[in-house]
Length: 349
Image (cartoon, rainbow, N blue to C red; front, side, top):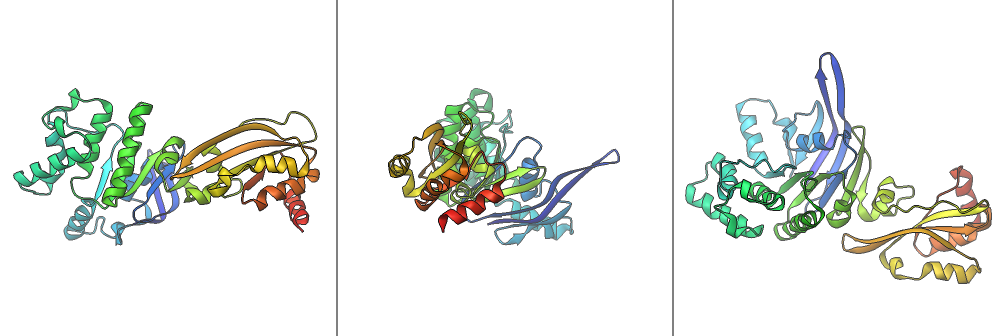
């Protein structure tokens, strides 16, 4: 549904150049919720604004629903009209709501329909239908100042849906909300995704958002996508930064000659007593240094940091046992990973 290829955005000011996006390739499948995460300045907001061409990319292409939007930009009146038409099928939800204070809730939702030339009766019908959809049927005549933050964001979502979009873009839409309200907004987005078949691309710096509703995710750093995939793929990737951020586990070795490993559980393995089996099978004492478990994309997933007695060379077979159970195992305290990998392969033989 959304594809960016080699997307680059360079800002020029006072003789200086700042590269906000540096060759970003992104692939969002139809009907999925895709999260882009990263620290401030990573390029997330620039990316989402380039998807609907609120920002014109310096180079690269943006394709939404099979249409190359970058081919339409700045190519004359007809192309610009086609771009406006394409944008009408892309809804956007903003961090700070961007509601017009002088308009009622209903009138705020009707605004994009006015711009599209929809008749008054049809605008009213659509606005009231959307208010009911987002749970604010009784707030049509209220003004934004009379609403809570969560209610304002629901109005913003309803307004974004006014043009019956195929794609919904969300730029930090929950970062200004308290945790409980955030959960309710994320549940609303997931419900809309399922009920309407919406493809949702959301920008966030909160890992909890990814855990709660995302099917796929990408990590951005310095204007580049450094890691991406479905959440299941990410959790199964050795050394994944995203997996470590989604399920942080602390804990340091208690002394010398100890081996620390991070174990990721997902699928059926998340319900099996694998650690106790390991302890019984090899008659070893295992220390749990930290653990985190949650439900991601409807599946139970967790990570655990455990400590095994002895140096790495003495634990090749127990670590191999964990991997045979379908677990992702990363050795946390090995400074030279290449020899460690070789030892594991030798142990497997």
